[in-house]
Image 1 (cartoon, rainbow, N blue to C red):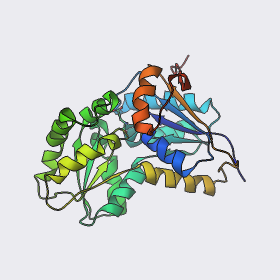
Image 2 (tube, protein in one colour):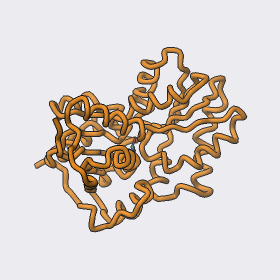
Image 3 (cartoon, protein in one colour):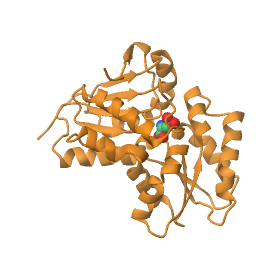
Length: 278
Ligand code: DGL
């Protein structure tokens, strides 16, 4: 069995392109259609109800593109809205990034002390703590809400003084307590572009060394397995297409999105869409 329909990938903004990139690498034959709800970003400071409502509208819009699976490449939406989204989109398979991110953290950690960097809503919802404990009951999980990282990433300020100062401020509490982590999970799809700064700053706070992991590669592996298990993998020889949609400012999406994608995104390849119902 095979299925050549596209996989839908959703994020509140351009951060999910880190997951899209991993999918592109792992599944070169698949068509991918990406939607960033840039008009309503950030989700990470909003209530679970608002995030659920926005994410439902966005993924319903993606369904109009006849997708065969939805990847919720936004930790905030996957943390607080995965079950309602799966119910709203059923029988479409829906994959979130929190389970794969937790798995990457548990695999990487030797001490079982894992720090999670995420948005305020993700930290508040506790989905990472639950997902890590489901894999390792004894893990000691600490969390830090790092909302400003989202703004820095969207601004393209991924290196330099401002990013360093923000990282020092956000990371300090994690490295002061008894449970100094040996692994940091980048629990927001915007954060991998700041990995160098985060890694460098974390390295100055402990002599033990810190590994950084994110959910992109693990999610791509999980999607590959799910496609195979459900008979949904594409059957084509050539490269799959990647299509981009944003709810605001295609020019900005293309310019900053290219940093996340690791290759140029042309403005003309980003479609401006209105996902509001009615
Ligand atoms: N990229 C989103 C995440 O993974 C959050 C960014 C936002 O606050 O909208 O959590």
